Image (cartoon, rainbow, N blue to C red; front, side, top):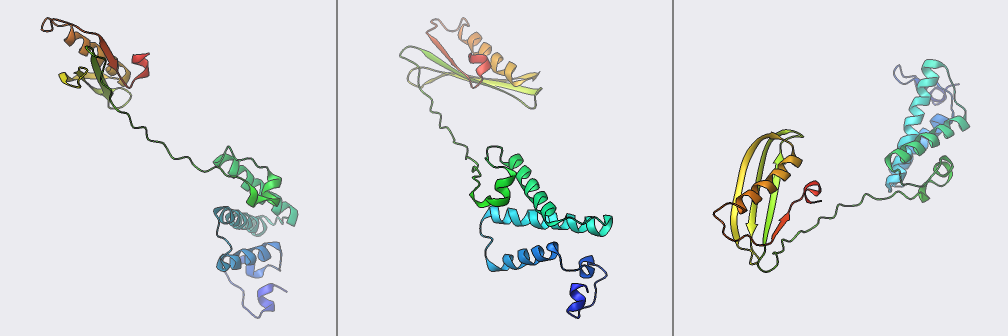
Length: 210
């Protein structure tokens, strides 16, 4: 006799499980349901495990109701382990685990934590005595789009000798960085500057500085 009928409860026209005899799916579902209220699911791995249990139970229920396919206990357990194992490998490629660990030793699987990005604090340093330092930058909106360049020239005391910025049309960022250096050098070698000291160029583009 169906479970709910034995308890003198009427069948539900929505839930097909009310017409199903006691089986593994119902037992596991009830276990997970009550564990959720007992405070046992405190770790993320426990929540993840329970989610895959519930998902697999739902798929097994659909197979039984719509396709008349009944999974054995071993088949259902193996499917849960395989699904959880492949999800862990896709989400955490560095995690060392296999489907056996997932089924027997899940809580001891080491999942690497996401490393926080370390912000580098870059401090401008002046050039040697008597030298000038050119700091340039070029930026484009998109891989190729409206582009602008700019730069500043300073001496060993950190004094600004000249500044420039301009729009150069539609280019990419690499070309903009290179053109910024060319623009700065062309200004320095102009007739208005009598003596050209040692020049140091700084740019955040490895393509330009290498």
